[in-house]
Length: 150
Figure 1 (cartoon, rainbow, N blue to C red):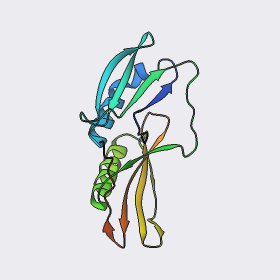
Figure 2: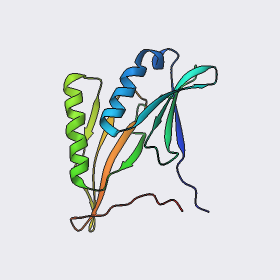
Figure 3: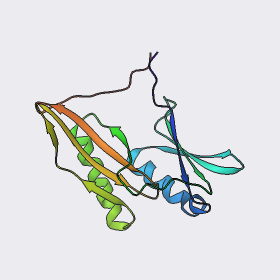
């Protein structure tokens, strides 16, 4: 049986989630459509960021004395169906960045390998990793690639 992504836990320094919880909730709900739920875990109130209600895919954000520090390009890839969807999310991220300079964006030229094109940008806000928002195209045509649960 193939394994599939279930969750990722991201740890922040003590007090950081407490200080930024509402901002994290608002940003990822607005940009990615994720729902955020406060959840008691490990003697604290964590933040559960769910990708949707139909799957068990989520990111759990907690505070820990020993926490993640990712100054490089560590990221989680998020797949869109079309270039237009990627571009719409980039435009929304840029609007958010214009109002808050803590929103970080890295724009990339299309990665072309033969007739395969990856169209993407990276975004990060208050969490210690980047999110790689991308779509795949083949010879200029969208190539949706979705998880299938059976």
